[in-house]
Length: 295
Image (cartoon, rainbow, N blue to C red; front, side):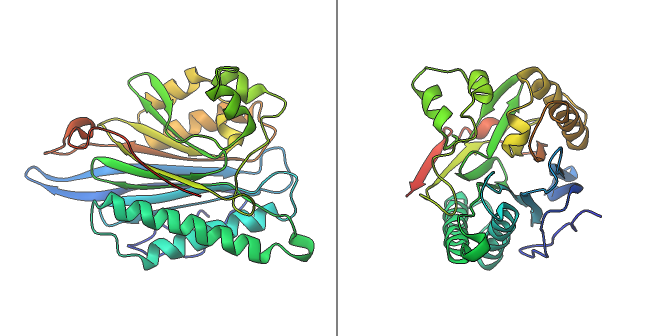
């Protein structure tokens, strides 16, 4: 059985199992025409071809919004599953203890960044004995109203699918991303590069956290994922998922495509955005991206 849908700022034990499935619709919006659901969410996590699932994730309704996160225990390191589960738990506790006024994305960014930092400290503290050297990636998101605030450490990713376009909203902290930034590789070539699994920052080693807010539009599909998904699905499959009738169907399309070739654990959270009356399409008031970074 998948983890329960969470109430406001309440996070039960949202730890990984070999196969998880969650489908929820959150955000009852009172409008003139009645209630409308703003964010539709579906999540799946599988071990895939590996004996242990080192990914962890959580998704929880927060009043009229949504908080979710994906962590990927670093391959080849001891106790990657311990590190990823610990990161999700500490981040969830941080969000639960933080009062985030509705729609205050600056406060949300600080809370997510603090959660990443505290999770890093916890991973470092527990990386002793048989767990020495453990680490994890972490990508988290706070959805509210017409924006999403993202925070990222490592190469787990949030991708936006909108009107046939596919755009990564987070920047991977990885060796191959540096080559992409310099124009040496395309994003597709980077996914197939022999050093694609080398990350430059993580929880547990050389920590940084990048945070940014992005405007949302009606019908947008956002995918939080571990590299076991986004390194193995094509742009065409992403576009198809964006055209799916529901978040659950989009998640199924992505999982089936990735599972054919992925050699890693696969975790994804799909969020579909639904507009209501009074929606300011595209977040025009703020003009788009607002970035924060902490080393």
